[in-house]
Figure (cartoon, rainbow, N blue to C red):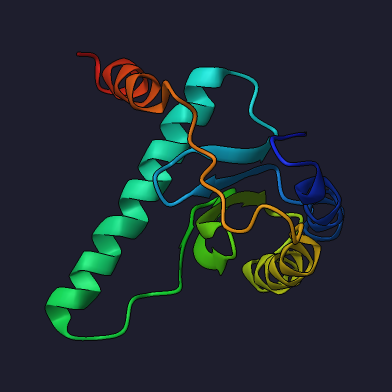
Length: 153
């Protein structure tokens, strides 16, 4: 597991242990990764983050067009894996969690432990510094590079 912010590590570790999630990303709404677990290649992390942020952004726009409240979370269930994607507000801006889980757990357990992790994250946000943007200086070029790698351009 890797985290950019030390205060994120313990809540994420607890979530991973309780939920038995296989892959997890915590990212800003722009797709900047804050913490990850289970991914082995940087291009996979960047691609998943960009796609996760884009999926939530497009579903929020769909909700706006339909005149309904934005969807808080999305899930997709396959034969052997499920994906849970949820946005949440932090004092440091809006974050997104992307979780891939297997047959050894359930969507209900993932959601329960995800909500607990969000509560723990909010309780552990350092007071000093206030809201902070975690985007790296070269984020835009990294994002474009990962999108080119993903879509072959």
